[in-house]
Length: 345
Image (cartoon, rainbow, N blue to C red; front, side):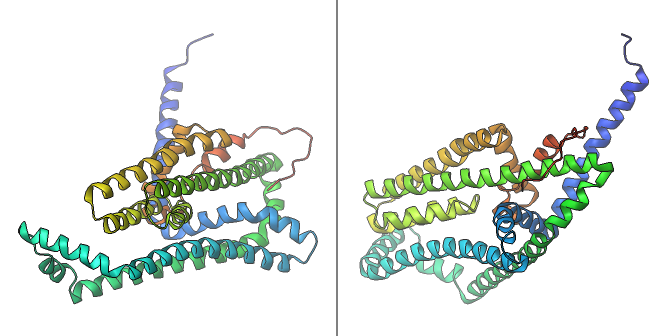
């Protein structure tokens, strides 16, 4: 067999460089247009999760009625998780209010100790929590809430329209590219949707493990409201980075106020971070990689990659991180035989 000619090697190098440049441009476009593509990606993920329910319901009832029921179930799940967080935080708030006298005594002792070392808390409060600063904080919170509300509304509209068009889209895609390319895309999309649902099962299991470990640690360490801390950790674990950070910081601050010891608070903070690290950075990538037939290294890398591309919408990047690579891997563009392909999503 003759060696490849220099011209073919040059063409191959040009093709590789062209592919690399195209990838960089696409990633840059996704990053710049995150306000457009992030709600769409989140909506496609939700559609992949709830489509089996919609498909079963519309087989026995009108499609619009099935859509209404599916959306009601989806919104109910969101309300349940939000209620769990609100219940846990509310219980913690009521406990703090009921123990306000002892906490005030702790604060006075800390203030006296800091003033003895040249740090005046009253001056710090006046500098960083004045009226102008509080107004800026309120404006920032309002802006974030408006952003989240807008994101949710756009994603909800995408989900509503997308669920109505799944069957029609499948029929159109099936005939794309003389039928061969379309069938391959349907197979890849179907398998990707199945992987999404498997991943959410793994994610729910890991969140439950995190919640149980946080509850056990809080109970063994004597930290009050151990069940509430476990529920908060379970619910917030679905929010990458921000959720585990909040679920770790709140018990740490509570432990500092409860026990009045900086060493105890540091110990609580360290142990909670160990739990989050072991479950989130070791167990979950291994379980997810096994369930999805993806390397745990790729799973962990995609977490940080999509957080870098879409930092403002990293809430859902764990869920849709592997869709493109898995779709291209499963949808191999070759003849699929005579057996008809029926999408399973």
